[in-house]
Amino acid sequence: DWFRSLFWKEEMELTLVGLQCSGKTTFVNVIASGQFSQDMIPTVGFNMRKITKGNVTIKVWDIGGQPRFRSMWERYCRGVNAIVYMVDAADMDKLEA
Image (cartoon, rainbow, N blue to C red; front, side):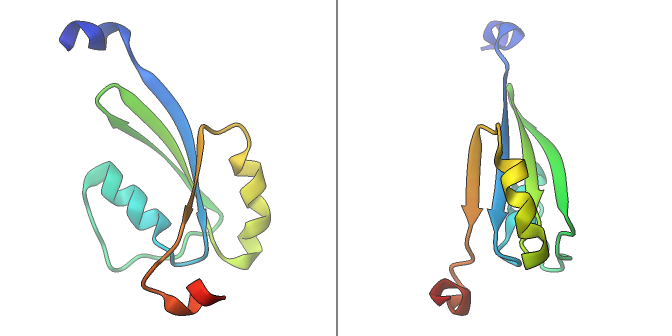
């Protein structure tokens, strides 16, 4: 494992999109640091964070979900390795919309 770690590293980019208050930033914070906070401020525009776990580094684009930022989604989804659409399954009003 140690020897392999000298030569093998993986990097990828991931974009998180979804409606406002769906938990995108909370998800990034929990993955990056294990910290959960109830008191989150809505993302204005976007946040970018690099998360390294072992030999894997993921550049995460956390895009604001408010209607005025949705036109940006396509720009941040181009060329990434994965796109994750976050849904707050506890918010039944948004699920039915």
